[in-house]
Length: 179
Length: 121
Image (cartoon, rainbow over all chains, first blue to last red; front, side, top):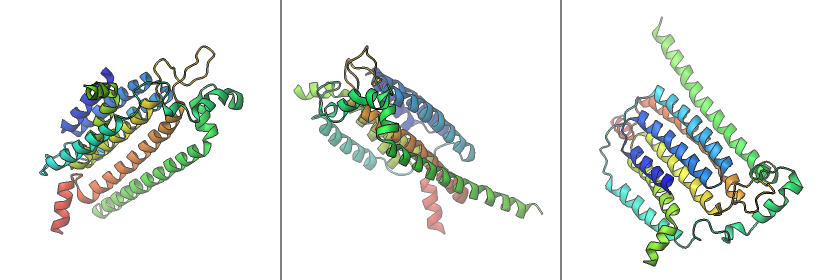
């Protein structure tokens, strides 16, 4: 509960921070807090991924971007009332929607009754992997993971094409100037 | 009073939705594209929380089978969110590459300045 409140505080700090460097560092702190919350929620694999990918890789690529662009945010001339109103109303509707969900941590919620008991009972017999998350990710739902790697591959190609084109244009510009 | 009790029981969801709406607010109200992307990732992480929270059982343990334990938290959301985190960082990288390209073409990453320049040409 304390960790969740801290998360909310860090998010408000991100909104108010004008220096993009500060925003990136706060986002890293946010990711580590999120990883701690996930450990408390028993999602150890997810917490490990969040700490390495969310706090590590994301921060590195954000900093690499800041290296290439200006690092302070301009004070916006637009009005903030309408976005605030839209977010507040949407948030209120969503909170109202969650009120009918089963209370936090109950064992007899619907989510625990469907396919999960079978996974927990049979993974050792069928895959010989004690970690159920790994078994489901790589074995039962292996095709999903294949799709995921396809997405990452596509994104990687996109980033490479965008940035390589930029570098080549930069070089030709310089060549035009130098002679 | 019962409404209040219910809110306290669902405190985790309230915070999750607060994070989600803050992310939405940053995406809509702020003009700087890097900040917009950070807001988008805050929105994304709040969705991770929204998925993981119902899977927790109080008194349960992480879903790694061991004879010493009988109650495990729900592993299925964990699997889904593992996939989502990795896809999230891929989209973040692609978005930042686009920001770098926009910065090259316009010399700025502020939405207002970009609109201004488009209007003038």
